[in-house]
Image (cartoon, rainbow, N blue to C red; front, side, top):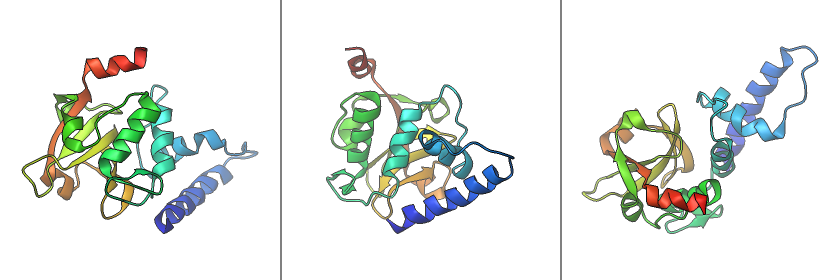
Length: 179
């Protein structure tokens, strides 16, 4: 929780500093805090076509502690986080572990990643052992066993070393959105 407070304080410092430079600036719109956080602090380009519901969900969960088998803000693991995100953001139910989530995707190249796609890792294992949700600009949100819910970069040496594949939910699962 302490890290979340530090991140929030840093965000407020940067945000209020940039707001102070404009004369008679409007007060901050609380609905845009997540958008401002990702664009200013995380350096993620958010466009008019971006899924703001996705960014709001991730923003709300940043700092949630890791708990194996968890699916709540009291504690969550990587698949629980991806599962909650897909349920709340995309109204779609996905598997309950990284391996069965992988069975629900169409593998894609890293260069094809779009917001909401899934990234899979084999961490010190021959089997898929970790999943994250791509949010843009080579970054993904996930529940790390060492730091809880956070945002990481696919170019970091650790994630490059263990990266396995990326995937987009198969059409049959995306059809849930239309029903």
